[in-house]
Length: 198
Image: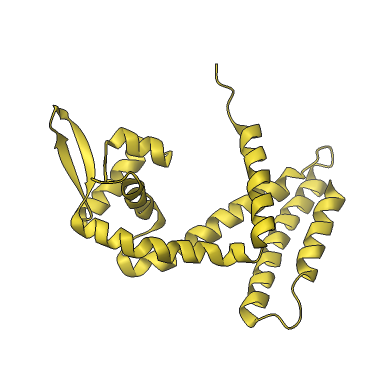
C-alpha cells in the first residue's frame, strides 16, 4: 500500500512535461507541495508511533488539502459579489430547487448538511445583502420559508457558471477517464464511511 502511494506520487510528477504551460507547472508544484506536507505528517507518525500504520494520513490529509484549496479558489471567484462559499451554497440550494426558489430552513439544512445554527448565520448575512427573504408560511405562521429575492436570483445566475468553470480547471488535468475513476473511488470511500441505518 505504501509503495503504491509513493509510485502514484512519482507518476504524477512525471506526468508534467517540460514544455507544459507555466500555470500547469505551478499547479504541479502546488500538488507536490500538498503531498509533501502529508508525507511529512506520515513520517512523523512512523517515527513517533512505529506500532501503527499511518497510511490513512495520505488519503484524509489530501482530501483536507483539496477541500481547503477548493474553498480558497471558489472564495476568490465569489469575492467581487460579496459572497463566500458558505453563502454561495445557500443561494445555489435555493436556485436548484426550481421556481419559486423557496425552501424551509429545515429543507435547507438537510440539503447543505448544516446545523440550524450554522444556517442561521448564513441567512442573516444573505438577508442583510437583500439576496434572500424570510417569508411566513401562509398555512402556518410559525413556519418560515426562505426565498431568493430578484437580486439574489440575478447574482446566483451570474456566479454559477464562473464557479463551475473554476471547479473544472483542475479536473481537466485528470481527463474524462481520470475524473470518472476518481468519482468511483470517492463513492466507494463514501459508502465505506456511511453510517449503518437500522
